[in-house]
Image (cartoon, rainbow, N blue to C red; front, side, top):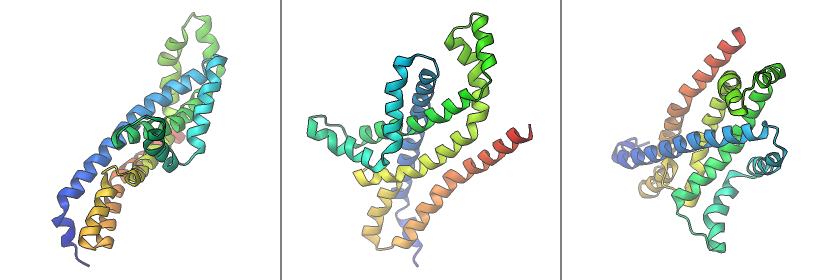
Length: 215
């Protein structure tokens, strides 16, 4: 084994690491926002909103992420819509994560006792005020452990973007392997990087669950 290859191509690995972090953060932030909006719409009682959002959730949860990437990056070009690889991966990961996060928030919202909704309505609270001041702060405590758990999965799933040419960590690793002929060292290094990214979040989830169940 020749570990000098890691040092020799450290700049390529660093560039891939930064791109992976950017995609992960973008997907987490935009996906959380999308999921929150969708979950609020589904639990608002507006029946005309429920069907389209339910269809969106089922579509993106029920189909493989890889197929979604192919459809947006390659498939849209066949109907005259040309988007670059960054736009395609950002859109797909946002919609994909939003569908899962919406269900996490929905479950959290529905776990709140119905009496709190009724009391707030009796006091004249609007739906947005009810959610922001009463329901969402409680929902976040319940939803945070599964939410962080999904973030961990999402960070690891960003490696799938390499199949459409997105130059993230794994894609850079493939390029280095082709040049150096050292797959084991490169793949082990990439695995360690993902471990370093995800393990602190795993510890945080464990800590949060203990706090919730102890209380």
